[in-house]
Amino acid sequence: MHLPPIRQLQYLVALQETQHFGNAAKLVNVTQSTLSTGIKELESTLGVTLVERTNKSVAFTETGKQIAERSRSIILQTQDLVNNARSLSDPTSLPVRLGVIPTIAPYLISQYVLGVGQAYESLKLYIREDTTANLIQELFDNKLDLALLALPYDAGQIQTQVLYREGMHLAFHRETQLLKHNSQDLDALPDASLLLLDDGHCLRDHALAGCRLKNTRKIHTFGANSLQMLLQMVDNDLGVTLIPDMVIQAGVLNGTRIATQRLPIERFYRDIGFAWRKSISREALLLDMMSLLPIPALDHSA
Image 1 (tube, rainbow, N blue to C red):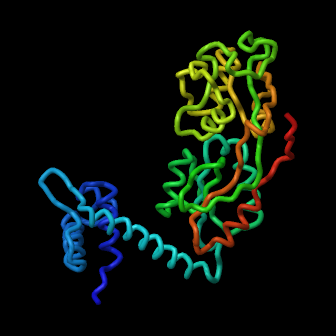
Image 2 (cartoon, rainbow, N blue to C red):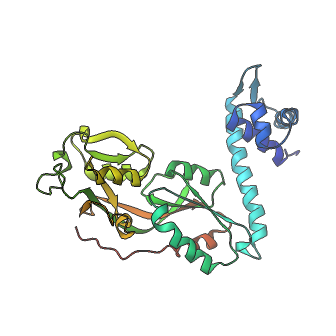
Image 3 (cartoon, rainbow, N blue to C red):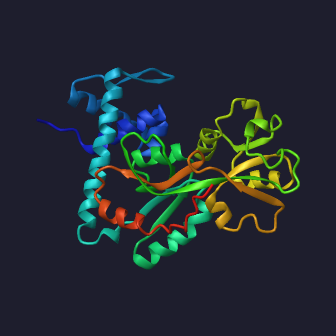
């Protein structure tokens, strides 16, 4: 049986990702004619049509879509095979690519990096900050080895492990008139006074899950991309927001006019943990690295 080379599978996956022969060729660092020839040879080897070509567009056949997905999986397994071979003698010989979400990175990552550096002096750690959905996709695509996230999150075939649960606090200007008698009833807030992160940030989802609002008009249409921006608005009494334990523990509110009330942890919480691809060759190393995450002293009193 004549088997297609991995390189041709890479051409197919690149073409599916870009939907353009020229862009796909740049992605895999070959000429467009080389990539086009490789796709045709792959079709000949498999005896099927993978791509329907026109002057202006690329359209994958249903068979082509399925073969491209299988090819992606084969490429990932091959890459892992190579990494496994290289790391048999020394698991730290290859860098570890770590992703972290923006609502964790400023508060935990520096301590974590220090701990990993002390445990593995020769290990190179590359860090990328992005939203949960993007980090999960990069785990699937073998662009990341490990991701530090807030859970729960539906990660499909990605493995997850919770390390600890943290609570949340209602944050407001200490002289605000938005809250009646220090009430935690968010449905009693004026309309458009609850400030949350924009869609795509899991802290927004965790906050909304706890709020159980009867009236969504309480939520301001403004969507911030960072907790720092939300806290600046709260410091100017433009609304109230919800923040996790680690923000307070990091001293972010020092010097502000922001006061807080702890919310019931049975409703308002997020689980801090890691995600990684199942059966990755360096899983033992990654599991040990996960154990190095600093876990703060927890106060679960409401």
